[in-house]
Image (cartoon, rainbow, N blue to C red; front, side, top):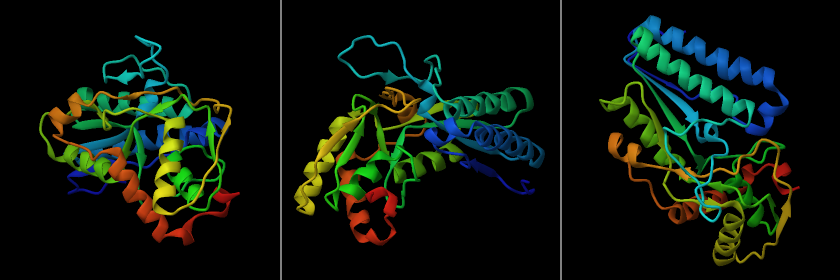
Amino acid sequence: MVKENVDVVFHLAAYADVAATIYNPDEDFRSNVIGTYNVLKASLEAGVKRFVFASSASVYGNQPSPSPDEPQKFREDAKPNPLSTYANSKLWGELQARLFYTLYGLPTVSLRYFSVYGPLQVPKPKSHSWVVAIFLMRAIYGKPLVVFGGGQVRDFIHVEDVAEATVRAAERDGVEGEVINVGTGKPTRIDELALIVKTLVKEVVGAEVEVKYGPRPRGDPLGGYADTEKMRRLLELDPRPFEQGLRETLEWVLLHKNIIPEYILA
């Protein structure tokens, strides 16, 4: 229930785990579809002035490649290709938000978050999501980094930059009804990430880390990176470099070893 005199609703609540939603599509539907509809309806009834919806780059899935040697660059006008129930529910949320804007006048904007990382991120059990946190937490203890697949490309964006983009989406004019990528515009392969983490942790902590490989998980897209032209134009956001954010995240993990779950180190 959205109370009166609320100007902005940030709808970030979700069953937010690709692997978990594949094995539990009922909860995905209840939380991400029915839940989003309920918040949209309540926001409309309360006369909210801006509704910001947290979507996901997973809606792109796998896209046709212009060159097998180049990572995919995702523009907002690309045809969605969701490969998981999570991605499909996020795409539904975008479309429903757009309809609430065009049909009923609720000022909505959807943000397609790319791969968010940073302080306070603690991976869930049996999940391959949040790979930056998993790799850093394992690496500082000298545990092997397991790369599932390896060729997948991700655009890693720091949580503070995501937060800034989200606030700006609530404040800026001219974003109503839009879908906007939130990423850095820089691609990183998962196997490259493992080597970057290995090198950084050896430099900072002195730990030697082995890199191992496993099969790519079901529903895990090959991925790509964000076309950030729209984000920079409408939100005027310039995210920090990944190397800077990764070092900041490592510093946080080292200060909070006590909260690293046992299942991460198993």
